[in-house]
Length: 256
Length: 72
Image 1 (cartoon, rainbow over the protein chains, first blue to last red):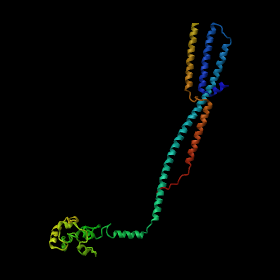
Image 2: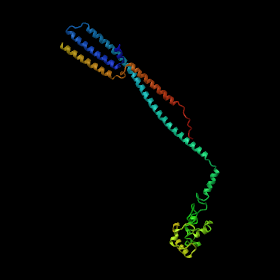
Image 3: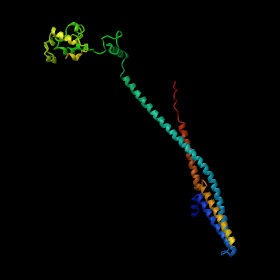
Image 4: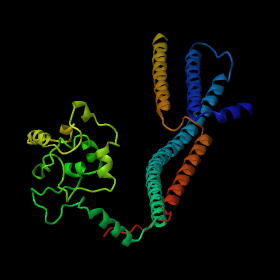
């Protein structure tokens, strides 16, 4: 029983080989026995019949096993086809997985961008401004011609979208710098532009400017180190300034 | 007698060669590396695998699809 169970677990190949070995041994024995029996008597009578019976039995087993092997061969072919189909399904599943991953990535990106846009919309709604106010502000910005030249501007026009040198000199800072050297700088009307001062009509006039400046209440200017004349109109200084101011490349630094 | 024993030896040698050839052919036969019961089990497993994978693919292919509006 145990032997049969052990045989049942053995593969068909092992069983076939085992039976084949038995067949070889039995046939060899039979042949040798028949060869010996010619010359002498058999040691055990009926032994040859026994061997023959065993041989026939083994041959029958061998035939049965060969039929089983044939059936197993057909099943093996079917298994090979199924294995190929399994491989194809595996590759289809991998392809599908790849596409699903790609779709998930695209969707995640789209959802993120949509959320960001919704945040921007919400932010814009919370800080909304009326269009009239924006237009008013735009008018205010562009009123000084800083964003676009005036319609009647031509090359040669001294107007600029930024404070020019003359405008700076005529401002508070310019007046502060020119204080101690007011007598030196030319006050002749014709030299007003060359000296870096705007004509009086364009000069900004401040109430505190005229008297305090002349008394010297402002911080000392280094122009005094050169031993210049006390502030006031002086014709000699005007001549010097006129000579200095004829330089076409005069700038604010030249007056120092 | 000697000739007979020689014939016997020759026939035995032929028989041995034939049996060896049969052994080699048995070794090269496909599908007999397992017992019939084991082979049936393997076949059932493979069939189940194919069925499961077909079901999985069918399930994902028949999921609801989005209606993507065509770009005009």
